[in-house]
Image (cartoon, rainbow, N blue to C red):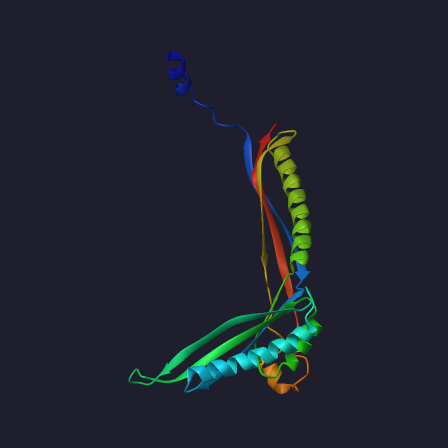
Length: 222
């Protein structure tokens, strides 16, 4: 019992000559993933009719898109499909409006934009850019190496600056993030569709994204 009480009363000495620091590695990389959202909207007095029209438009668009689908290059999926009532000022339902989405996504920009141009039942509503998983991993690895090198260099310089010969790593954490940094398309998507012929590719232009890896932690000066 006495030994246990003494152990509880032992005060752990605060660590001495411990330095907290962080460093970043930044890589700017070309966006290589394109996502286009195509939309069909319908309006009518009967919910069943509006729903049937939307399904027909979406089915036709899917059939056309799947002809060009290729894993990783052009992936096709449906988006939101909704139907909602339209009300009068008195709060009574006087019609229905619906919306269906088709999403084209992949790394083959030409294939995607040409396919979007051929899908006449739907209009392009949104164009977005990002990094593919492969591009993100490569960029993160490069940024991580830069961050680690910077952390080590900073730790060595600070150790010498404080009059120590070296340091030992105590703890470290690594975090990565990326800023999409997408610039707006060269032309707004809806305008691009209306200004071009029905089967012409929708013009797009990707920007660059910034991948940042932060290494932070503490070192023991010695």
